[in-house]
Amino acid sequence: MSHPTSEAPTSLQQAVERGHRLSVGEKIAYALGDTASNFFFQAFNIFLLFYYTDVFGLPAAAVGTMFLVTRIFDAVNDPVMGIIADRTKSRWGKFRPYLLWAAVPYGLIGWLMFANPDLSPSGKLIYAYITYTGMMVAYTVINVPYSALMGVMTSSSAERTSLSAYRFVGAFGGGLLVASLTLPLKEFLGGGDEAAGFSRTMALFAVISVAMFLTTFAFTRERVLPPADQKSNLKKDLVALMHNVPWIVLFFAAIFNLCNVAARNASQVYYFKYVVGNESAATLFMTSGGLALVAGAACTKLFTRFMDRRNLLITLMLGNAATLLGFYFVDPTSTVTLYALNILGAFLAGPTPAIVFSMYADCADYGEWKTGRRTTGLVFSASLFATKLGIAVGGAISGWMLSFFGFVPNAEQSETALTGIRVLFSIMPAGFAVLTALSIFFYPITEERIQRIERELAERKQGSAPQPADA
Image (cartoon, rainbow, N blue to C red):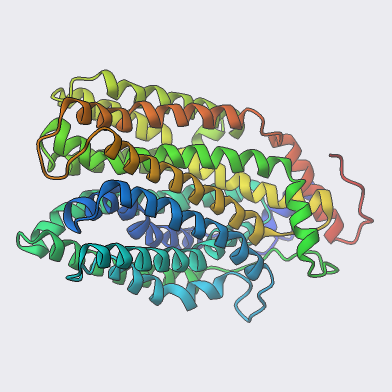
């Protein structure tokens, strides 16, 4: 943490910002944690449904139901993990120790999901349930504290927005590597054996993920503490969360947005294998989109100079929805148009998670300002609950829609099945993107208001008498 200079700050707000500046090195170290997460998270979003149906041999409808059941169970675990993390006390802080303790189990279980044991059809489904549920628990144990860590590394909203931009450059960088390397590595490492190729590829991703999480643990620090007189009280924490209107808005926005992401990602390989007729073309498509996501995330700070985060988020989501809808009307053989739409849509989507997660950190400040209780872990874990619920619903709908439209793995598809894949790839995610934008319309924290909240929280911590917060 940098130290204030001898020059007196012109305002308390400037003092707060100067006292919590983060170095570029610490921001990069934090970003590597989301790169690590996305080596598995994006692999699941893009390839897991395809792996289960076309490689492991599970029925699409059964996989859809499994996604819904296991992900809802996993989503419920997120607030529990947030409550545990908020009450953790260690020499490394509340959130960082979980990056150390859970990294190896996370990598190991992620590889086991793709180990492809020789089992009966029912045995395979049971194995999928056990390993997928285990992976989601491991993901919760490491990712809830990782997300909450952003809220305690600095108390400055501006610095958190910058940190969030670094984070999602790292996240999308991980997603880009998964999109561009998975299929080629599967072929290279498997030597024509798809099952072996997936297993060896995920083993490699597991080793890299563990190393990155340990780097994040080593080079980040926690600085923002809860009020000194705050007593542990779960009921008060939950009541405070339920009265946090900005968080409630973001909760619903996250569900809709992740339904969009889950449906879109799950359908990409199917779209290129069966509609375009060239599965290998999916790699370049996803790589170019991944590069556009990274570029968009890197531009977050630039965009926020010209528009406040709420209005920017609405604009970006509506623009992304328009590009998604366009895919339904594009000739699948028109490669240039497909790639242009994808690059534009991905670039518009790039800043959105960085903005949203900086808003979650603002919600933690808002909760402390309004109620006197800081519940950073619970705020972020409950946001991840919404994220996983959205993925659960979007993933389940994807599997069910494939079954409903008559999809048959590794066969020539009927016109009805091809239409279903196109709807899943375009119209459905576009609709969820519009719902996300409509949700954000009700977000009540302006940039001026969060600056006021930061000032008043700083005054309280300097010993000034606490003032009642306006609703």
